Length: 212
Image (tube, rainbow, N blue to C red; front, side):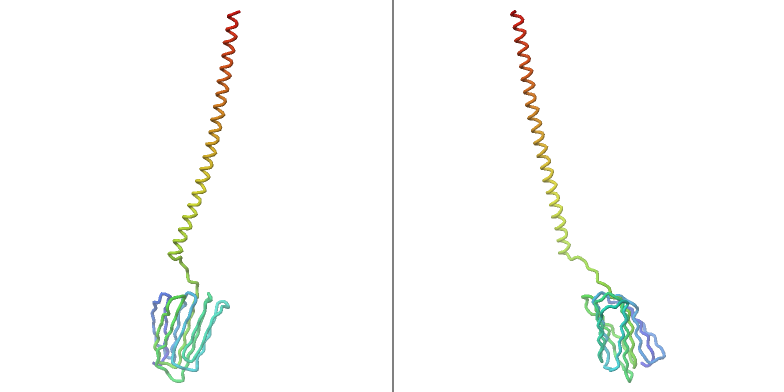
């Protein structure tokens, strides 16, 4: 197909996308990706029919590391850095080529998702803006179980410590109460003995008074 084609590709990491093609009076195929986010590490591979005229330019928001490998049949982009990457590829032929271009995109540990674009032109241009972000992590069932077990163990240890402290306090209270009871008993005996001695002495004195 001769003429300019603007292909707008809406892609997200869930794998759904839509493709809109608009004809234009020029002799190229121009594929533009809106900005989208992918989980690190990211790998993008574009494959096409053999040509010696392939150029690739990668721009970064920060000075992040990446790898861009260009060959006569493919362009590969790899990175683990968290950054925003602008990727421009230009693939030229001396004659118009009727071909299907494959774009493979992989992120994190997920399998590669492939997108195909048909073209019949001499010039293929691709423009991508990729925001590479860190993949969120979620605890596994074993990690949750271990965390709950640790929490229960800590609660049990705290309960045992509190129970031991309460037992010690109760033991101390019993000892104090017993000591007070013994003291009270001794005081009572002394008081009773004293009263008995006084009463007996008084009785003796009264008996002597009567006999005199």
